[in-house]
Picture 1: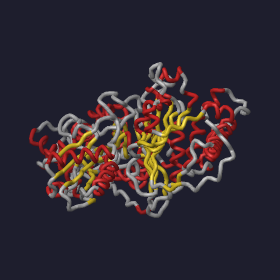
Picture 2: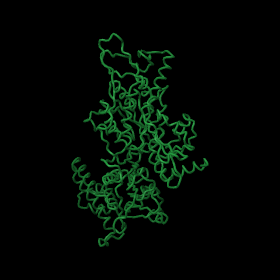
Picture 3: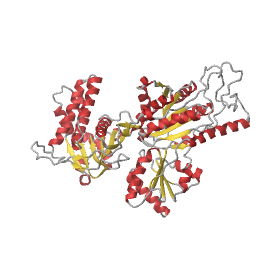
Picture 4: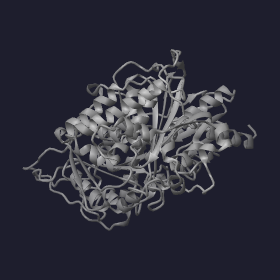
Length: 631
């Protein structure tokens, strides 16, 4: 490839509305790091964006194999967007394995930037290519994509030849060269990344030589873009017109952490998170552990059962007990959650769903825990079930969970998923002072009362029992897993009392519908078809509805955040539409619930491939359903 510094003056950057980029390489190549830094810079420039980190389950698969490929996709735009994009405009493939596993995700005519130094016989063999296959010379691929082959490894080694570091340390900077090149292509300034590198490696880790190497590689990538003839054009994505205010990049797990912290403050209670590490929920424990200055307690238990039991103990003592997990851990917590139901104590259980069953695909996303959240406990043990719609919505869902759990004295399950937990978007930072307080009342001491305290005397509106703090004079009472008398709290084996207690526990969950907002219908509310989603399908549904509208196929859209109880007007909304279509990343669990509860002929659309819906895919599936229905 020919390079020259005597290029004519480059024309102005080409304006584009949106771009999707994917960085892909070995799990040790730092793809998540450079993707995150590119996204942070993009956020500072005012673009709307959505990200899709995609990493392997293996801690460190054999280098150069397809099992170890890690990817980070970001779509950024000058207009509101809802997904990380379907096909990408630019793929950066750091080795043959990354090329092989990701090239089909590039749109026709899109650019594929590869490190040609990695496409050796050994590298191709590790990636599973046959000995006679040369993918960079493949005529079909070359006609379909614009393949830009550059000696990236060699240029990094040349740029850092005077660093005094070994080849292994120098090769770790390849990702920064790639980041610098992409920043040049899309007009992203290098200063935010340089500041981060120096702050992290030089100041925090006391490794100034590592910071200097990475900065040099970053600048070398930018310089290569300025001088190469292989990529003669640049692109400009203007800032999006977003509502005014202070924004920051946030992913779902980060938003849950901040939401729980604010909820504890608004309730005047200490949040105590009791967890056991499990992908993709472990960052909740890590994030909350860093907020001790705000009174947050964290406890890493020896297993999932101990974690939920400890959280119940926190709530029994008058705090807000929180535990987090994924699908397998939720199954283990089921018995203790049933205990929290019969104790009638507040408890927050976060389930960051992943592809199952069992270990399944632990770094991939799915929505398959809905029925487990609804019914996965012994006996009649109803819980409130909420589902976050996006990464930023996790903040509001966390506050809502604490508000409803303490109001009804019942566990609340928050359903997130791996896509929401790890994906990021712009978040309009709210005015915390404007968030309403969470009112909690405890019975007052009555040390001189001749009457025994009645723990199950209920609030007439919420039906919740009184939350007495242990050790309060005059409020001595009995709690446990055995059924209780509906007034005194004494152990009772009376059949009619048991039925009454089951009914009361169910009714207090049902009454939560009185204090949650009605479901709102958007899009073309007068259309014949309603697209109804829950959880992480929101972005794909919104984007699909926009495309269908452009094809003269108007759609009404609605999204459920409250799954148990459901909004009080949901039945009336469903009855208004000739077609109700429910896209889910499972086998149709919400569809089954709605068909049974409302006797509506809802049609499921399902993808269970460890990822969310692609918009093009969803549009086609909706058209197929409507064609089959004769609409």
